[in-house]
Length: 360
Ligand code: ACO
Image (tube, rainbow, N blue to C red):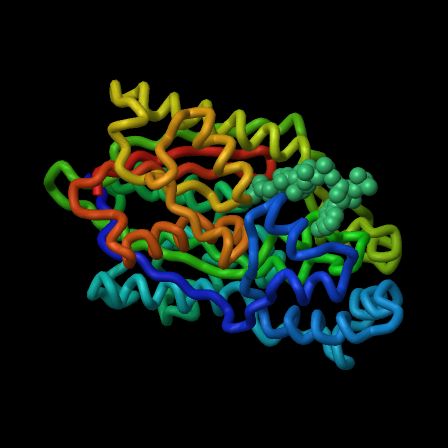
């Protein structure tokens, strides 16, 4: 079996509470908490500095426009990249596993907004770990990326190709959003962070029991971002920015409905594959999309509230990083113990979704 032998996480030190956001856009702590359950989130130092300035700016629309046109304080270089967070989480997971980067047979990494359009972030991470030939794979599955990554790692290990694999979900998405009224639907939800696990092939009954993956590529406008994509010619242009084509878009209600439906389907599918019921699962580690989605899924499947791990209140939605961060915190808190049955579930852009059942 292929076990998760160690976990790690990293979040930027800058904390943004709902009150700071309410000084940038028309919103309130009450609205955000009631609709999403989020009270605060971590963001990159650049986003934090930008938000402080935006909060103080008399003309917020004009200030945000100038940031998208010129960057911040005359610079367009980031002080923190997604590979920084991925590296920190990976190093912590490897330290907890008692291994060095050279002990890895492969790296599987998932990120929505990479450091560079190419090469991929797994490649950047591999180099920053001081490796020069270990294979690295990157996934662009959005919030479902980590669960997809675990499934791919598990299958490569089951096939005997690799023995020890690092799986990372890392996100630095806060720099994408418009923090004025124009982007408030998404800006209050998403945030930055990274989580990582070390998987090892070991004899015995503990490890990944099965993974169940799905995609529906017919509803692309539910949650999407053109950013540097080839949907425009040229890939990047002044006009792309002026026409607001470089920023993410979301149909919140469609995402909500689809997320609840797909979470429920894949939980049922996964448990049915093993002849198990909801009551057999000790801990549900769901993608921390927003509290209302988690509660709707738990209510409908009659999952006892104390079995569903939640930290969305403190981190917001960290996309591909959300499941490994939640898993790490649940393990650290003693909420995932040896022998427990743990179900990881995620849903994201695409839409893509999946579940992984683990005997811990
Ligand atoms: N503050 C105040 N008002 C806001 C904000 C905000 N931050 N954002 C949107 N609104 C306004 C809208 O402009 C709209 O106003 P209008 O009615 O005048 O047009 C109104 O609030 C929207 O109201 P509702 O649609 O009733 O709000 P709803 O209860 O649906 O909540 C939300 C919106 C939170 C986005 C909800 O649809 C939701 O949770 N969707 C899921 C989105 C999500 O979680 N996405 C990420 C998860 S999936 C993933 O991770 C891939």
